[in-house]
Each structure stands twice: as C-alpha cells, then as structure tokens.
Image (cartoon, rainbow, N blue to C red):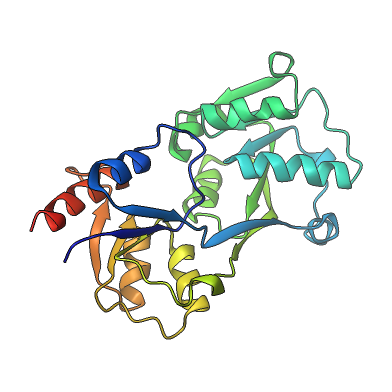
Length: 248
C-alpha cells in the first residue's frame, strides 16, 4: 500500500535542513509532528520529600537538557545558590553546551562524555571521591544506577521532572499511513489516548529495541525498524520503505 501521510510522535524539528523535510519533498508525502509525551517539572516541595539536600553534593551528573533546566529551576525555587565549585559531568557535548544558559562556561569545571552513559563513566571514575547528584526524570534507565553502584561512588538520585502522556484527542478522527515512535512512552500514550486503537492498514515505525518490545506487547505489528546495520537512522528507514511502497 502506498504511503501518503506520516505522523511523527515528536516535536517538529527546529532546523530547516531536517531529513524529514527532505523526505516530504522527495517522496511527495505529508509529515505531521505531534509530541505524544511531554515533560513536566516536579515542584521543589516534591523534591524535598525525596530528602534531597543539594548542599551535600560536590558534583552533578546531567544526562539531558531537561535535567539541566529542571536542576537550575528547582535550585532557584529552593533558594539554593549553586556553588562555583560544583563539578558538572555531562552526557554529551550538546548537554555541556546547553549549560551556558545558566553558568559562565569557562569558569566552571565541566567534564564531557561522548554520547552514552558508559562513555561518561571513566570520567566519573577519575573523580570517584566526589559526592555525585543525579537529577532525573521518573523514567531512568536501570543501567545507570547499576553502573554507578558498580563504580563504588557516593551518589544520590532524585526525580526533578516527569514524562507525561500528552492529550491527543484532536487526532481522534485522523488516520495516517505510518505512525513513528521513539520510546515505549510514546506507545503507552497512543493506547492511553485511544484504548481501542486498531492498527488495520497503518504501518508502525519504531526506533530502538525497547520501543519494539513495547509495540509488540501492545499487539502491534512493527513494519519499519531502526537503527539497523542497513538503516542507522529513522529517516533512512522511512525513506527506503516509502520508496519501495510508492513505486508499486
């Protein structure tokens, strides 16, 4: 069956040269972007209930830009002055660069990983005598606490923000040829919004093994998958699938 419409369950890219826009133009399809989940901050009161004392920590582990935003938001709400001596361990260059929104970059001790949490661990190990703090969402990969425990460092985690299902009621009468998901939370949102959802002729595209599992657990047939050796990105996987489907 031909593909004419695609729904990406994420916000629209802010860059003009996004590969999704190339797909629209090249394959003559319509792509809509609707976030199926969004992030909401946890109040400072809720953070206090987790027995958090920010002054007890000499280093902070930041895994995303959301973690950066909500750490500084909560610190401000608690009237906690973030000390200049605090060490920042950032998952990636993008996270470290984002820190500039809140601190004078060149005057802070900032340590940067390459992209994944295991790649940041050697840096944390070098400073294992620090007292680490990890502000996170309510959905934290189990591998992260395990890795920190294995290193034997002093650390504490607290939920500073939550992943929340978005209201998708405006899509109730709309159908798409392809639905694209990037996390199990996106799949969860689909079925919380539409408990009676039937796949029928809709193709399902998923990114990552945990998303594949979530889709299958909900009885969905996965038609397009990334990353794979042949399709390292979702846009590449979509491009190939659409080209094949629409040439018939």
